[in-house]
Length: 130
Image (cartoon, rainbow, N blue to C red; front, side, top):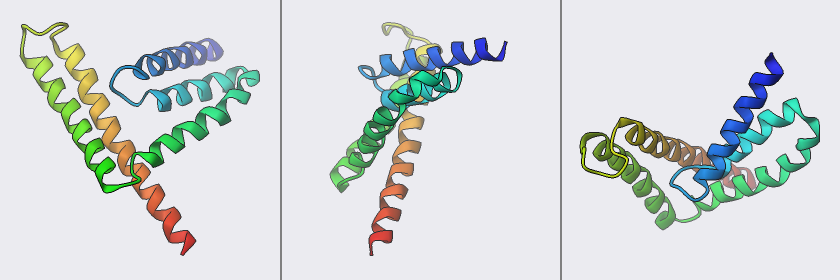
């Protein structure tokens, strides 16, 4: 039963991550999370974890490589949260409602949390080099 639940959860997170590669949200990190879950059930998938993890961490570090990128990322996160509120409150929009609004709000929050994590990670690496 545990194996089935882990497989379903891993596939679901992986599919959402793939969708978020083209939609607003942390797609690559969700792909990584899905792969990690699936690799715990299917060890042959472990060979895909390291390349995806390297790309996800590189993308996270690139997002905080300059003040302009940090500002853009923060504005994108706040924009997602604002769009989520609008989508939840304005009934005439395509796919209007709180299901769409909540997913946008959560994407914005995840983006801001990951941005903070990336910033701290980059700053600690810079401090170690000194």
